[in-house]
Image 1 (cartoon, rainbow, N blue to C red):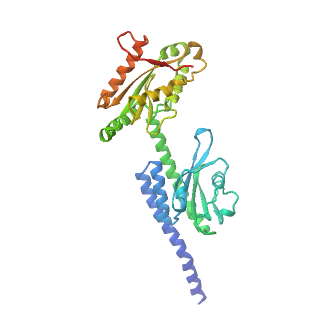
Image 2 (image 1 turned 180 degrees about the vertical axis):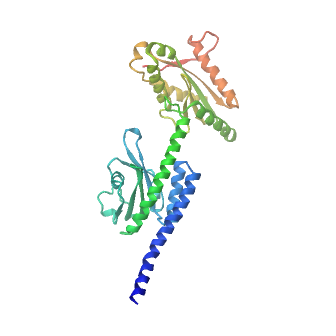
Image 3 (image 1 turned 90 degrees about the vertical axis):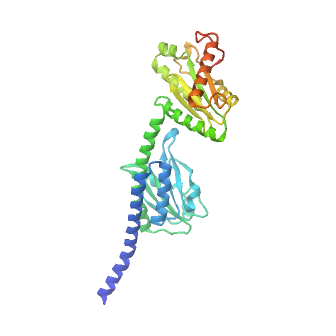
Length: 357
């Protein structure tokens, strides 16, 4: 009889372990499918959050990833579900908050009552307990996976173990996706200035013209050329010339709308793409971009300022195709140069604006 009781207890203990194993296997199978089909990081995280809910049973969870740009490390909540759906976008400076402790120590954690824990910076009235697992790639911490419930002390050790195993696989998926995004971004940007390159501009330009054909809203491009740049290169060296190009790219991309695009068109030529903007609006944009002057390297200042010539073209007034608009903008650019004696043809008319200081 005692032997039968022991067997019954063993089967009872094995059931939750088997259920946990089944949930984990279902999640990993789904995650493997997502990793092979989805490389975009934002989309991948949304799929992961859904899979954690559907396969693991954690209805409220969040993924926070480390961001190192801008001079200060931040943990940023990139995706959330259930009780934590509204947490997306929350930012935590280095060393602040419980999730930083989890990431830096690389140690999973159960918090029975979030309201009673001094390490919790934001106490959500609808969230009382949580579990946390670090996202670690080899030895490098990249973020934290967390799950939450509305009740106090609602998680147990098996829950934390399950979350920790899931976090290991998620870390690998995120690393692959981040690498893909970095490669995609490198292919879309100019390696010197960090703004969009010519290829990216042409792709967006085609898209915006096609969109304008549907919406009947204007789209304007502005070609920008640096006058005297060759002299800077010859006099001060190519290193100083590169610094000038970086400064111009920064000035043209500053304070832009999300839909605007600043790109390096080639050499010392830049271009602005301004959706839903007419000629008058484009003139305001370019005036604002150069009015305060472009800060030049100290090695360049003694050799004079830098002038910018520009030409704009607007769909559909100046053309209905990409080639027509580029040609119209280019002709106006050279007309501006000619007016100030930078071209041999004095018949052209236009203007340029000095931006060096």
